[in-house]
Amino acid sequence: MTTVEKIWLDSYPEEVPHSIDYDEGCLHDYLKLSASKYANNTALHFLGKDMTYTELYEQAKQFANQLQSLGVKKGDRVAIMLANCPQGVISYYGALMIGAVVVQTNPLYVERELEHQLIDSGAKVIICLDLVFSRVEKVRSKTNLEHVIVTSIKDYLPFPKNLLYPFVQKKTTGIKVDIEYNHKTIAFKPFLKAGKPNEVLVEMNPAEDLALLQYTGGTTGPAKGVMLTHKNLVVNTLQCIHWTYKTTPGQEKGLAVLPFFHVYGMTVSMNFAIMNGNTTVILPKFDTKDVLKTIEKQKITLFPGAPTMYVALINDPSIKDHDLSSIKACLSGAAPLPLEVQQKFEQLTGGKLVEGYGLTETSPVAISTPIWGKRKTGSIGIPWPDTEATVISAETGEPADIGEVGEIAIRGPQVMKGYWNRPEETTKVFNEDWFMTGDMGYMDDEGYFYIVDRKKDMIIAGGFNIYPREIEEVLYEHEAIQEAVIIGVPDEYRGETVKAFVVLKEGKKMTEQELNEYCRKNLAAYKVPRLYEFRDELPKTLVGKILRRVLVEEEKQKQESQEKVSNN
Image (cartoon, rainbow, N blue to C red; front, side):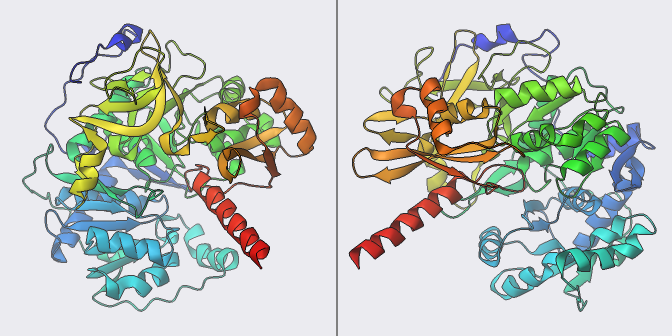
């Protein structure tokens, strides 16, 4: 299983190289390079305030020196628990400069999740928002944390927004921030200001030294720390740059509403922009009105997002009142992109919207549809430069025939080093040097790949293999449906049966019978959902990925409650 015929290379646009020359630099070296080439370009735009590349580089160096003054050394883990804001970018690159390993931490984590991640990573320092400080404080004594650096959104707001923000924060969140600062609990802004902007010289090996511990969602047990090296992240960002060959370094404006704490937002929003000398327009959270206004006002050219974001935008009645023609390209990730959503968004903007595929373990992008090349309905596209993909047959354990469904495997320089302190888990997901994704799919005769579903999400009903994504695609085609997700629920007769959760578009109505008739017209009988549930909204991550496992758990608890009632 060592050689794979790269038939997808014939489908490459001529502007995209089959292989890229990667230098031996670390990720933070590219901030230094952009600060030299694009010194006065706006690096970050945050709610009305601009920061140039020179300013960003200087502040990252100041932060790096201050971390060293706290005793942080090469290899130490530094956690960042922030919404999208300039402090997140400064902390990230500052930590990398001294050889520290960044641990991106979701600000929505509850204490149990936060405690697990901090203990597992062994983080010595955490940079967090004032709004989440109380959570950090409650788990602090159980961890290796030596210092907590606290910041606020207002720290980088322009006048007078910075003065008004505390009042707005209290009104909207109900949280009054009251923090007692000392030598272990440190205020970000004065801490940064006291730092010297001196060059930090730490000997690094990009291929071996970790840049990031990125924790997976923990859908099959405790979240695991994915070890990503500087080379992994540099490679994936350069691949992204070559894939978007019609963009111009130093001239693009990217909208960063995908969270930086998610590997997808970190790579395609933050690292991509900084390596390219572009402007990153930062929004701390996704709101359709804010996004539409920002695209129009800032003339956004690049907008990486998640399918649920594009769904929300195309269904916002005010979208017709905004000029979105500045958009050139959008790369959708984190979940499958319905065809109807793609087509409608492209009609409304005139830009290109394509689907990318990858995992945290692949830094994250491995496969994507060519933005300005051949696309195929239902396909996630072709492997990126220097990336190989294959489909492994469940029967033989060898590469499957063309069109045969099996497990997708990835090999390339963006594939992780392994799982943090989990050698056995690492061994399980590698077949020689191929990373086994856990996604079921197939490849056609031109090297285009198709996902049928997650291996663990496949529903086996009455002996039939049913893939939720196939049913979801049909549901998304219905004009009244805004969002849909399919799960398998236990069934005494069939083993499992199909249940559909549906969110209708505003102003639309539909009965269960009407939806069932629609499904029977468009799906084989064994794929038709036996159960339907209409909801106002579906549970999602901050990236906008629908949390299928939450719905599965709800159904499990509901069934257990019903069984208890029956037994009594």
